[in-house]
Length: 124
Image 1: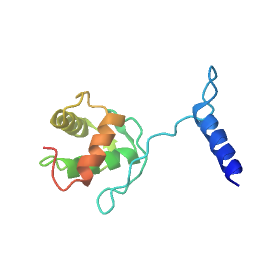
Image 2: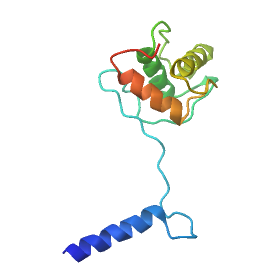
Image 3: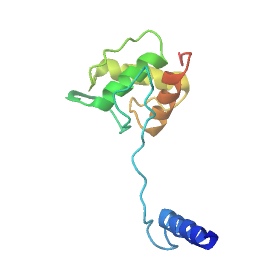
């Protein structure tokens, strides 16, 4: 029984990291947000987002909601469109938390947003 378990773990480990010199056998899944229960529950998807005022995205709604919970004063409309107000709020948030203020919501910005939106205080 123990031998089967060890072999299973070794096979799983090889499948995760791949064989030396070969491409990995398993690729990473897209980042998934923790739904912020009772606050922001639009989606758990965390794609890269940037200025696109005419394209509706549920992930933009999630980001807008999290920005509203992470900062005081902006009160973004949670409409799913990444327009100039959303971009300005993203830049402001990025500056508040000390990360690159490019106005793009990528993995680092999502991580900080998730933290501050779930917090009992504000980033700024």
